[in-house]
Image (cartoon, rainbow, N blue to C red; front, side, top):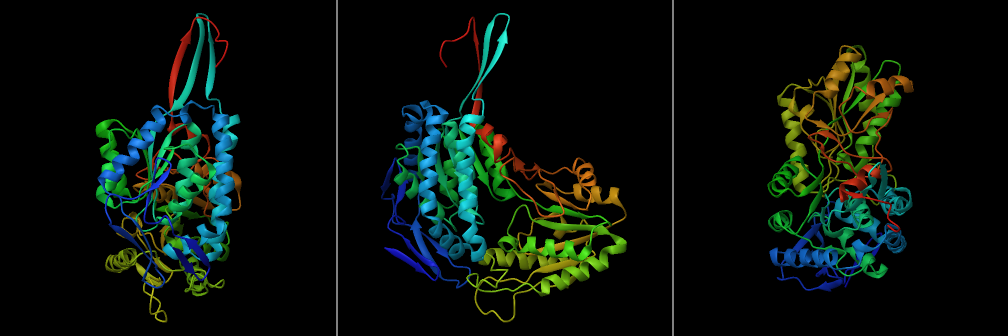
Length: 493
């Protein structure tokens, strides 16, 4: 069975099965999940739908692989050799990853084609950490030797969102595998194809049985996975509401949890920065993933004296954005991923207008496109930070421009949010950026551009989540610290 698109074909042989215990197995039922194209609004893929019995089988496989298998007992360097081969095989499927992302989310192909190499970089960084990270720390003492050893946390459920399924899944499983954990992948039901390809690559790379498993499920079965007593940790990226639910369940049973949730990130435009340049940067950023980007700069804070001029530049820049077929290299903004998301964005537009914000441009579906979940890039002006559109994550190509009195007021407005994922200070001065960045309650701050890095750390303050992903900070949540106190020095570790 093969899926054919305009960009290429994908072997769909395994799509009606689940990957458990190192084998492609039949699911418990014949239930299927539909993957709908946001361009055509038609079903383009179908995959197996797991139920509780399938979840139990995947958890049992991962549990056995952790408790009795070789993986957690290997040295980090030996696990890194497996990850190197895994990364090599993943790179052979780069074209398939790109096709899957565009077909299921509508992301433009220029971005889809760049994503695989960027995403697979998560494994490269984990390979490097095998030799650079201290899994055993020596602490000499007058009474002998104290060792701080870091050991794998156990069985991990990695739950990825629908907007960036490949990058987020690999960012979770790479450090988990390096740490020695065993993993159950649970992709979003709307975008499961990348996880299928990851599982096929793990199989081809020869990862030991049960180390990496794949189940595809809707909410009820996913809840069963999170509640499962043999799952030691859950790593989730997605909505605040779902994250709150997962945190509550994990809290009940003291399971470890990492959450990367929503954002309502602020861009502070200082008076020394050119407004036309700022507008082009902000509009380019809002087009990324059609605005379905948790780290996007969606609140734009500018002095009252420059507010109208910035809005004019934003409107002009948005008028140049080409909307349409994501396979067209001239297109800069593809569709939203789902009908449900389109309706959500439309609802926020109505709320913004009702609460008194000025709709400067956009705010509706393009008149010349009959099919697909397309939405125009949108600017609201004269937004008060207390408005719903300034406080809640819209997850679409919508900017809110908020006037401020001065720099202190801008910082106050930026921090007046339940979220704290990202942010930026548009200024020509690095010292000023650093000074303001230290006052912002947010996980990442960039200078004069939307910024995020998984090479160092990514995550948020407040309701944007718990923990970090990427870098050493992203490895630590998959490890438990153990102190070993010896009367002398061990001869071998």
